[in-house]
Image 1 (tube, rainbow, N blue to C red):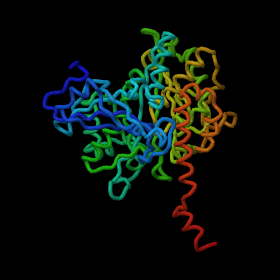
Image 2: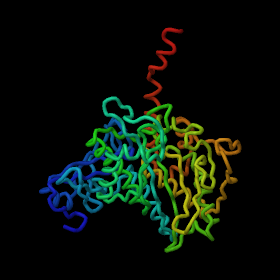
Image 3: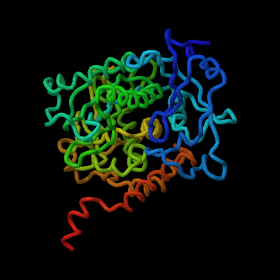
Image 4: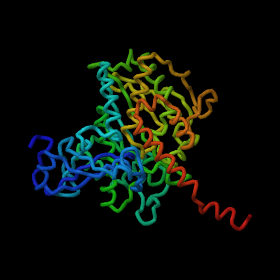
Length: 430
């Protein structure tokens, strides 16, 4: 066995998994005695596992449907195994997916990102991506926060949460996810954890693993961890913020004399050009659009600015290693492969075509009346995606069809519900 497949000492079980349509980690558990066989030949799993919605509902998709009988695919280990500190004897392996014909699967979102990483490489660039994820830690029975108040960045509140956030940080680091910091966020029960930058595929893989492992660790400490973008209407929502820099060898091309470079501005010009039509890559369910309200630290318009958290694109200037931009529109539940791939693809277009960004926003971006609004509903986002030849080229026909199918199914589901608020407001009064 090679280094990727080598079992850590004392391992009796290997969990092998991948990110599905929603970036949820799915897979199998393998007895250690069968691991050599799986490493060599892979293990079969229904292709539907790639295209479930978040509830595991199955529908007729372009690649798995009643006509083709919901076929299998194979998964193979992609990265070295890591032992799970909270589950002695269990190791985790990230999986590579191939079809039964040994070819890539058209709805594997990871290959969408692979294509853009290769494109950047062919142009002589290396992309670096750092990720920040917000999430809620809730009581599993009441589904409400155990703590109260905001107190963002409070060290007292951080200490109160340390019994669960401490193990999350330590265990994730032990699993090879380089956590840089954590802090309480701007809502009861909400926290943020930052992961150190790396190449895009590694960073996206870590996001998928992170969300799965955080849920497992939180559960062991009596919490429900959720990456639902907006679980409480009057509280802050949870975002997925990505920090990007672009390198040629040892040079960060976004950096020029301690300022954000012209090349960097072309890159964000491209991101701005396609930010609206690629919105579904950052939010594929109805709840994700509830974040998109003014003064929620979620952007509502197509703006950029210097160290400005009210804009969609925030420029951070500093040393060559720290100069970058942060994109702030996606929800914490998004598929990281699709979101990061869209950002890289649009940015490279901007760089190649020398697309200038809009006028920089100074001050309150929510008041910027000249900026185009970002889609604030799933129906608007889907309509833009359907018309986008650019998104079709990025995702491919099967992947785009699948994403639109999920969005429309989610919208249709919610349109058929009568809510408690409607009953309370209208039943006795109309």
